[in-house]
Structures are given as structure tokens and as C-alpha cells.
Length: 173
Image (cartoon, rainbow, N blue to C red; front, side, top):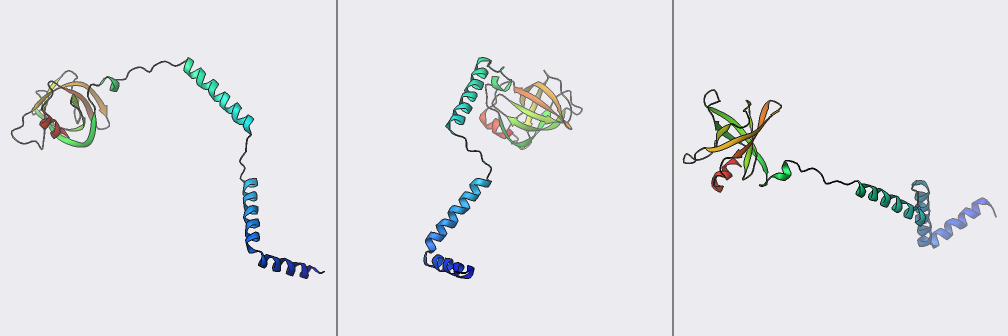
């Protein structure tokens, strides 16, 4: 039997047994992929050793655990809400014309965080009013708790002297 006859016999057998040929090809591709994927397939002993090492690390962390110190944000009594900046008017004798402008960056029922162009000393009292507020809404008194520089402006952390009505709070965003 010549080489050409062997090839002809193989081609005839493959044509008669197409599903078997497809199965053999799929199995070969899977085996080649498994060999060349480079994944290490560890046995049960490797998995147990890895689990024991993880448990030892967790035990060490648990032994050295200390509760984190309470941050300023955790001491808040009101939830801070962020949103789009709202333009406000600020009134104070420390301003040149008595009135300045700023933007509310975030707000809560306890106070506001306001961005302004000039620094204001902590402990100062300011009057604030949303620019888009109706004429019958007056100014709200706030106490400056902190003043931090941030890029080209200052961020004021302010507390309401007395919590304003909900309808006024909504005007700040």
C-alpha cells in the first residue's frame, strides 16, 4: 500500500465518520490549550496549605487589631449631601462692601461647606442667602468652624446658628 492509498483511506473514513472526527479535533484543541495555558493546577494539599497560611495571617491581624480613631466625619449628627454648586450671597462686616459671593459645595441640616474667594477667620458669624431665593426669604446666620485653602479659593466649614426651615434648606441645593 502506497502513501497515497493510505491518505485516500483516511479521507474516506473521515467522510464516513464526521461526528467522530469533530469530537477528536475538539478534544485535541482542549488538550493543546490546557498544556500551553501555563496554569498550575494544584492538588488538595496545596489548597489546604494556602488556607492554613491565610488563617495564620488573619489570626495575626486580629491579635493586633485596634479600633480606628473616630474621624470628624464620623462625629456628624447630620448626613452631608453633595450636589451641584449653588451660588450664595454672604454678608459680613469683614467683607469690603459688606457682601460677598460664594458657592455651596455640600450641605446638611447642620451646616454648609462654602467655597469663597477670600479667607474668613474661624469663629466668625456670616449671613448667607441663596441667590435664587425668593425676595421674602431672608438671610440665615452661620458660624464659620473652619477655613481651608483649596486651589484658587477657600473652603469654609460652616454650622447653622439655628437650623432653618426645610423650605430654606432646599434653596441651598
